[in-house]
Each structure stands twice: as structure tokens, then as C-alpha cells.
Length: 293
Ligand code: SF4
Ligand code: SF4
Image (cartoon, rainbow, N blue to C red; front, side, top):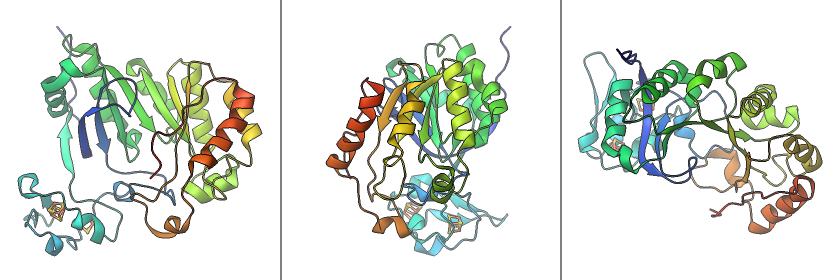
């Protein structure tokens, strides 16, 4: 008899039933709320904090889709929401009241509705691995279900999970995409609020286990130090298996708030200069951005 999935819940900020940019093929993507990095250039800052139920956003909702329940918690009525995002704009805590608390069984049901058109599912965020027990239970249930076991299970992560954490999900994980945002420790600490050693450790472990799908680099002129350290970055990436994608992302202002709005956006020429310098070392294809926002 197959084991019943553990019905753990997760705080879900967004669901995409079909995406071609969150891993290989057509993927069902679940974005989980909450992040342990504080990237100055975050393009989704409202996914960083969990809602504090301060109720400040309620009067700004034009359709009364937000209400305070008897436990003084803000409740989002999805059917009344027009998606205007006024609540996100006024939130003083980089949060979002439009959160669904979904169980593993509820997510499985949503995946079953479209599984025939999918290659896999991706857990993204925020930082999805902060809700690791949910991910482990969900991936385990997918692998154990004959109707869903063809779906590959991927995680899109900032790389902050410990090696012990990765080992918990490893038996059910098919691939991971990890961001490498800066090279020198001081720059990494300044840019994201955390040291980079966990990120490097995650990349190394996933590569060793054959589960590293992609490393994503975001060279930002005069802010991230990937460009000025391109030789060291290249020598490090060169040691990874050749099947690992190396992808360059462009910095833009979409979704960004605060200081980073004064930073220069990446241009095609910036990215090509970085690409060419990295290519000289790696001697293999490097994926360039398809859009510059
Ligand atoms: S989303 Fe922000 S403003 Fe609205 S209740 Fe939560 S913390 Fe307060
Ligand atoms: S996005 Fe939805 S919940 Fe938020 S203010 Fe607009 S209608 Fe209200």
C-alpha cells in the first residue's frame, strides 16, 4: 500500500500553471512567501516578509477583498481581487496580503488538473527552501504517484540552504537553479545581507550529486563585483560539470524599490562584455538574457 502524503501546508504567494523560464520545459511553478536574503536590488520585494497583519493595506483595497477576521488576521478574498496591487504598494513591511495557505494535497490536486501538459514542477520564491518540510512532502508525493511521477521536481533557490537541508530533499530532487550574486564576501554581504559561503557550498554539493541544473549570474555595473572578478568567477565555474547551464541575467528596474532604482540598468553591451570575458575562460555556451527591462 502506498504511503499517504504528509499534509503539510505552505504560504504560497503565486501559482503559475505554465512557465517556460523556470527550469526545463513547461513547468508548474509555486512561489513561496518569505526570504532570508535582503537583496538591495530585489525585483519582488513584497515576497521577502511574512504578513504582520497590521491591517494598513485594508482601507486601500478598492474592492474590499481584504478583511480582518475575528482572530485579527487579514484575510484575502481572491474572488473579489482585481490584482491592482495597491495593497503591495502601501505595505510598510515588504509583504503581501494575497497569500494562500495550501496543503500538499491541495497542490497535488492543482497539478493533476494540468499534469498532461507539464514536464515538471518548480518551487520558487521568495526563498522556497525556508519551507523545506513542505517541499520534501510534495516532491515525495509526486514521485510516489503513478500519474505524476513523470514530472521532474526542481528548486529555484538563493543557495542559502545548508548541506544537511539539501540532503533531506536530494532523494526527490531532479535539479536546482542557484543564484550567484557577487564574488567577494564583502560585496555579497552588502548586496544580499548574507555571506556567500552557503551559496558556494550549495553549488558544490548539487554539482557533486548531479542535481545542479543552472547557475545564474547577475552582473550589475559598479555594484555587483562579478565583472571585476570575472577571472576568478570563470575559474570557479569551469570546475562545474559542462552540462550545468550558466545563465546571465540583466538588472532592470521592474519591481525594484529604494536605492537600487538609482543604479544603471544592464545594457546588452554590458552583458556581452561580461559574456565574452567569461567565455574566454569557460569555452562553452553561456545563456544571455532574452529581455532587458
Ligand atoms: S500585507 Fe503588509 S500592510 Fe497588509 S496587513 Fe500584511 S503587513 Fe500589514
Ligand atoms: S491586489 Fe487585490 S487585494 Fe490588493 S488592493 Fe488590489 S484588489 Fe485589493
